[in-house]
Structures are given as C-alpha cells and as structure tokens.
Image (cartoon, rainbow, N blue to C red; front, side, top):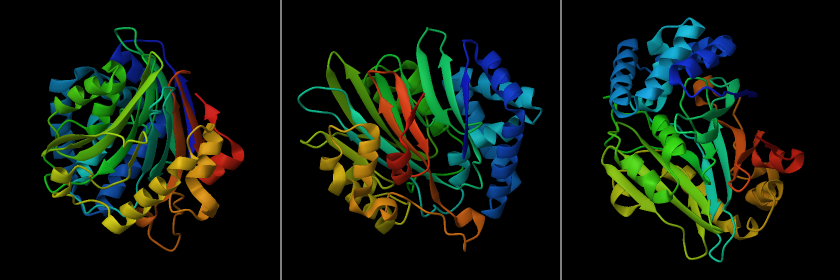
Length: 357
C-alpha cells in the first residue's frame, strides 16, 4: 500500500473534499471502482449498494452534515458519481449484506495506572487488492481543532489523533442486528469523535448519538494532565457498550464482542481466528509496556516474529476477495499529536521503524 500525505488548512468541508478529490482524483476513481467490483463478487447487487449508500448518506446528513459535504466535494472534483464515493464511505454498512470475512485488526492499548501517556499499537488487516493507496490526512475543523488520521480514499476516518490529546483505533465487528438498511457510517462516527471528543466519555456519547446499521469498536485513548484513560467502545445497532482496561491498564480488542450482552449476538469473524489474535495480544502485552513504538511492535510479535498470528499474510492461492494481509501497523503518540505508522506488519515495523505524521 502506497501512503499519500495531505495537510489541508481549509475548515470548509466541501472545499476540503474538493481539495482531496482534485489532488487524488485517480485514487478516488480507482478505489471506488475496486469496491464496486468487490461488492459484486460478494453477491451484493448494485441496487443494494446504491440503496444502502443513499440511506447511509441521508442518515449522515441528519447526524453530521459536514461529512456529506466533504464526500460530495470529493466526488465532484474527482469526476465520479456521488453515490460511488458514498458507497466507499459506507462500505461497512454495505458489507453487512454479505457474510463476514476471516481477517481484520488487532488493537492493544495501555493506560499506565500510575501516570504517563497511553502506549498503543494496532494492525490493519484488509484486502491489498482494494487498497493499493491510503491517505494520511491532517485537517482543521471549524472550531479550530486539529486532527491527523489515516484512512482509505472515500472513508471518513480509521485511526487518528487530535490536538486535545485524544486518539482512536478502529476494529470491525459483526452483530446479528447488522443489516443493509443504511445507518450512520461507522467510519463517520470515528471521524466525529476525532473532531469533537476530548475524553472517553465524550467519545462514548458521540457514538451513542448515532443510529447505526453496522457494528464496529473504537478503542479510544486520551492523555490530559499527566493521566491516561482508555476504553473500547463497542457499537452495534442493538446498542453500545464500554469495555474498560483490566487492573493492569491494558485493553485489547480484535473482532469479537467482549461485552457479555452484545457477545450474545456476535456474528463476526470466525471466533477461533479472532480469539487466537486476542489471546496472543494479551499474552505479550506485558512485554510491550514502556517501549518505543518499534520495540512495542517487536514485542507485539513475540518470539514468532513475522510468523506471529498478528502478522497476517495474504494467501496468493485464494481469490482476491479472500486474501487478507496486514497492510498497516500504527501507534498513537498523544503528547506529540502524531501518528506513528509503517505500511506492513509489526515485524516490518520493528525492523524498519515507524514514521511519524
């Protein structure tokens, strides 16, 4: 995956969208076409894609209209139909119409009980064929808040930080209540948290205010006055739950619900695969604390290095829509208002180091 960097100073959402769409028209057109083809391979009809994207766009317009303006600005400048970009922005909502996949992400966040900034790491596992390009975006909101994030072209946000000392990681979940009815896109919820929240409680309230049709979990961390706070906010159409760190300060999440009530409706990644990554991350968490980001990445792998279960390697013998790989390793530097990242898995990040954005 090639990463592109854009630092935009406009606080006008439509102008920001036009800036993205103008500079990255080729990437916007390419990713839209790739996702539409992916939906078709999964057996999701164009009618379902269009209807879900339209309803999600309408729900987003009611809930946080600036992101609709941004999405439409991207489409306008890139010369594609607005629903194509909206479908990428609501890709999790569209994918609710298809069976869950076998891969996804692993997140581990440490909030030191005795003080100090959070220490975090996440892998982003996805289809390389869908995301040859990714975007690192720095922006300013209308209230003057600054945000830095990583995302795909067309989606609002995935992993990011703001200058109020808050950041988030993003993992997909699936629940029996998910449907293709088109609620507020979960990626848009992540973006609004980054633009508005300063605490875990504020992030939870933002998530609770959205009417959802698909599930995800935002693992949110904050750092204020020398104190770290963290929690995983599990979101589904059936409700939300907050999963707090254990007594050791760690909260770990993969792709199954941890809240007992929501777990009863879990319908996501085969539990054995998600549980294996979850148990691995919990098993190595003690070795990750107090380390630099590259050292944390090495400890995340444990003694298995590139063969660790959190380093997902695409199986070239499988069709493209069934090939999953770790495309990005990321960490949040909240005191420094920065994302630390490396395209590739944690073993690559440990060996090559992480860049800062």
